[in-house]
Amino acid sequence: MKDAPLLHRVEYAAFLTVERLLRIVGHRGARRLGSALGALLWSSARSRRRVALENLERALPELSDRARHRIARGSFLHLGRNACDVLSAVRFDAVELCRRLTLEGWEQFEGARSRGRGVLVMSAHLGTWEIAAYPVGLYAEPMHVIGRPLDNPLLDRHLTRIRTRFGNRTIPKRGAARGTLAVLAERGVVGILIDQRVSPAEGEPLPFFGKPALTSTLLARLAIRYRTPIVPLFGSLQPGGRYRVWFREPIEPDGSDPIELTRHCLGVVEREIRAAPETWLWMHRRWVHKRNGG
Image (tube, rainbow, N blue to C red; front, side, top):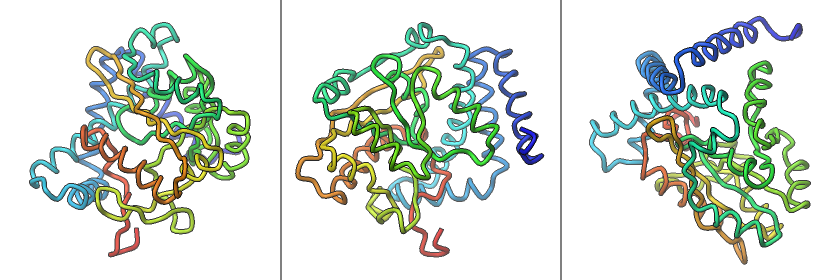
């Protein structure tokens, strides 16, 4: 901590203050507070608001301006609600969390796991993706999730403790190949969020909502190399402080080309987003922008 920049300490102190406040207001109150914070972000973060509206115009041109505006604002409110919910849910032990879960399609995951070739779990920044990862560690075995560490090491350590408290593990995105290959060699479970934009050197401009989006083919290449099934996993917030988590039918990599398999996976994610567009992160630059390359 003594080597952390002052800004990191200030950010971490603010984070702990919010976390303590969430304990006071209760779990349902945490969601309401999160919605309020999301509304504040929508009002103040003009550049992010513009990106969200541009993305929606690109992805869903068939909608009216009013409808896209509603979805964009809902996405900001959901981001705040989801973030506060994840922090508030730390109050739940394993028994209470499971009591609040409606779990669907578990047989899809277990069927893939029973083949003895490991499992690649595919998800996206949709709904409550953090909570959705918990059942794998709770009911089966650790899922090793690939992700980029936060710039603030104090926050990163804190959130890692939250993410791993029910058995799951994290694999830092930089240099993830060695850890990922080791898990799959042992026929373990690896989780990957496929909707993250990558650099041109790391991915391919593949269709997402009909427009080119730089996407890593790592998930597909791992599946083909190890003949590992890909199981889509998603989650959503439900009324009364509850959660719905569901697995979709496994995607088999047999005879697949990495590009085509990645296209197929993006199609699965796109269908889930279309079903609840206000719960996806529209405010990040997911597509290739010809105007400024960003």
